[in-house]
Length: 222
Image 1 (cartoon, rainbow, N blue to C red):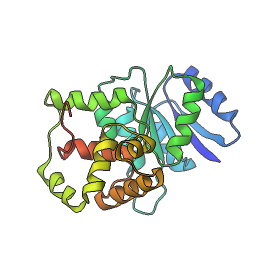
Image 2: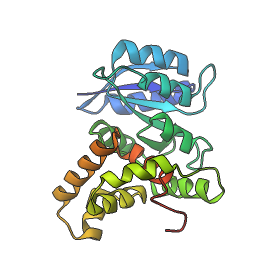
Image 3: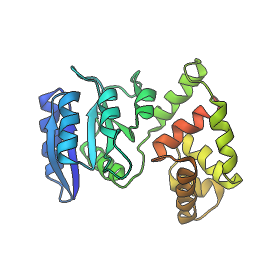
């Protein structure tokens, strides 16, 4: 069973999403919270696998709540955080990824998309739509993002093929799409992705996207 925590200041959103998720045979909603502070407390108490986190909330916004939820010692259970946004070009998108979010979902997304998102995040994959990837590019185009030379040096530890895979991850491609692009078996791509995350000390694909941009591996327009 996938344990889910809902954190949103709108009661109707919590109730609607909660009813939908409770109807799934492999998902259980362990708790819900009306703001970031309550969300952090609930996460520590219930140990969810996935947290559906609204970005804009009173008392404590979703960014800081995400940082606190994920700030646990090594070996301690760390949930995946799926950010809920009203607009796909929310100003907080890049900062949310840096805070550790594993993906984004629009609040008006179809029901099936919500359920699929929870399952994808629970399996350790990132959920980054092309619009989110475009936003990352826009951040760097306008000078809001800055390449980090130290991260560029770390890339030297990757093989040429692993570097290719990381570049395609940063473009928002799925394993299947990467396999087609590089003419590899999908299982081979999964192995490369795993090695890239391990070598760079990253938690998931979302962090890999941020790292690739911060290292300057992916540039605007590339």
